[in-house]
Image 1 (spheres, helix red, strand yellow):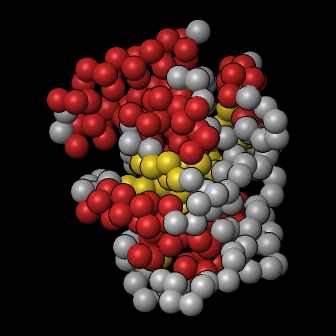
Image 2 (image 1 turned 90 degrees about the horizontal axis):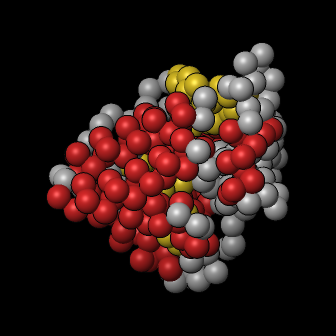
Length: 253
């Protein structure tokens, strides 16, 4: 109930505080709101590595386990995520994500890449941190899927520095907490209920070595990010190259 009420607080902040707040103040509000939600859900965040510095426009590429991923990362470095357009239709949460600056991509339309590139460019130029989940779907945290290299195109097109990040959710004894995962056909409401039933969850967020994308091909960036995330999680990296369709003639590199 406290978490549901906290979503109501998000509505108040986004409706009344955001329109009059500076960009820096918006980031502070978003980061604090995310941290408060984790605390209400008894999620203890443990951070290792060096996160991006405040006010510097970068891109974070992380494995995807749960909707909690967004809160965990944003509590450390407020982040505007690139998300599938379907998230916009989630009850309440979709509206919150949209008003908080989420960049929604229409995955079935390849031409949408140009629009996203422009939005990412503007966000990075404004000092925002942009986040993406290159697996394109969630897992229970016990495996790492191929990284879709096409999702790194906005980073390469904007010469953005990419920070690989790894997320793992555990019980207090260190075993994997599968209840935190938003995998399969589970709904957001069901996921929230499963998480709320846990006495405590430890969320481990690890940052890798930043990747400078200038002059690189998006496939190379995807492979480097994938290798780092796999190493941080202690999981095997998929043996095949990142999944991607062949570039058409004249496509950006």
